[in-house]
Amino acid sequence: MFGPFERAVAGRYLRARRGERFVSIIAIFSLIGIALGVATLIIVMAVMNGFQADLMGRILGLNGDLTVYGSGRTISAYETAAEKVRKVPGVVGATPMIEGQVLLSVVGIIPVLSCMV
Image 1 (tube, rainbow, N blue to C red):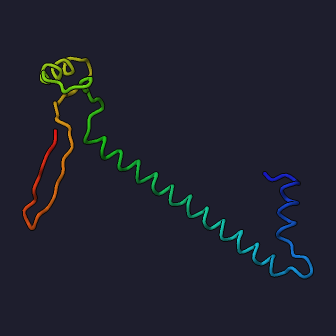
Image 2: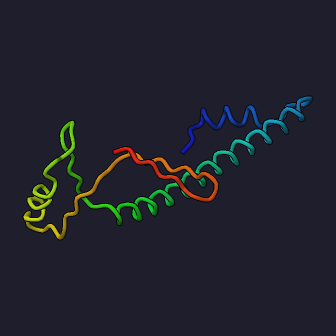
Image 3: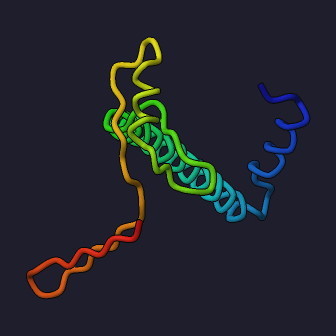
């Protein structure tokens, strides 16, 4: 995995000379700190990757496999488009949806919902 050159460089900086024992201790602590930091980063990324896969599975379980959008505008005859999709072999179901931005703000106890579509 490591060649002779890499081993020589690592040995040179990790071995202590006569009057430089303190520098060697600092180098070893630095090496351990970097190793712990990299190990922590790898573990966190692995956990987040698993969490992302679980989250995407849950989201995709709610959403369909295909989404049809109008090019630059909204689809006015959405029911006929949904009917065309339903007639495709292998399609189990098609449901028209409105997608847009929503802002929810709570004032006191009563939530106020404003919707921009």
